[in-house]
Structures are given as C-alpha cells and as structure tokens.
Length: 100
Figure (cartoon, rainbow, N blue to C red):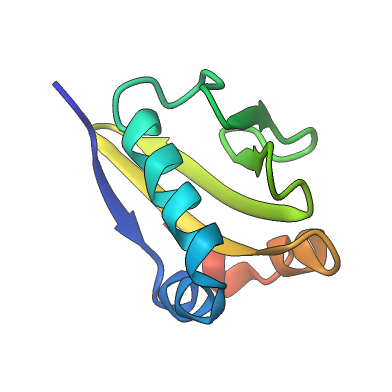
C-alpha cells in the first residue's frame, strides 16, 4: 500500500518556484518514494542525513544540485523542503520546518 505525502507549507512554496522540468522529475521521485521511501530509484538517490535521525535527503541524478528532504511517519511521507544545494542544509536548521 503506498504512503500518502504531505508537503510542509514552505515546501509547497519552494516547489512552485522550481523550473517545470525539475518539478516533473521530483514528482516522479515522490511517486517512487511512496512505495519505497528509503530506497533510491531511477533518476534519484536517497540517503539518511547524518546528525538528523529519521530525516532523509533526495538528490536528482539529472539535476544534481537540487535537493528535497523528508521523513516517514507511519503511513505518511512528510516533505519539508525543496531547493538548490546552496543553503539547503541551513534550511534544515529552521526548527519551524521540523516540528512534528
């Protein structure tokens, strides 16, 4: 049974600002994560972030500078943010994003 996904409000804004090609590839990756949230798939790599247990990073293979970070809570894929590598990890430290 696939997970459902819930993007954080700021993640929705960040997603809307991305170019259409990147958005399309991210949606493809999200569909894959809904079935296997901790496995890389065609077109994307995932990795658990060190120092942040339960928080995962997705990197697209064709747009290597773009990141998404997420967690899995029960049957929900919680998406916290999208964006370029530059400043990505600084946004992780914004505690309002990670309140669960």
